[in-house]
Length: 93
Image (cartoon, rainbow, N blue to C red):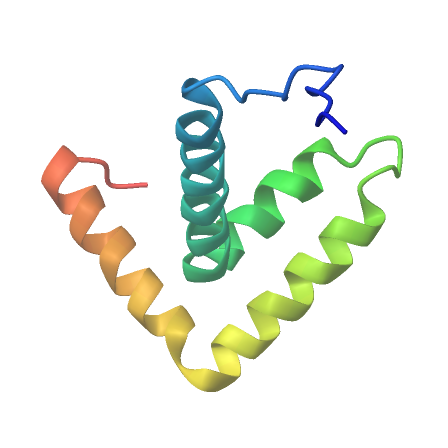
């Protein structure tokens, strides 16, 4: 008996698929680190945009992260970094 060749061609991934996936994961990782490093800013931002109430779950989560970062001591580091950045750009607010 002869071996039959594959009827359907093999699926070939485009060369850019792993590269695009890596870029997307990198962006989300940076956003996650920023949200964990500066939770107070995220809470303020979400609170300003929660007019309709759709952001209540992310806002509650961000407030929890803010409370934990304050208890652990990370919040003070973030405040120090914000003060240094404000001094560099000349913002007194």
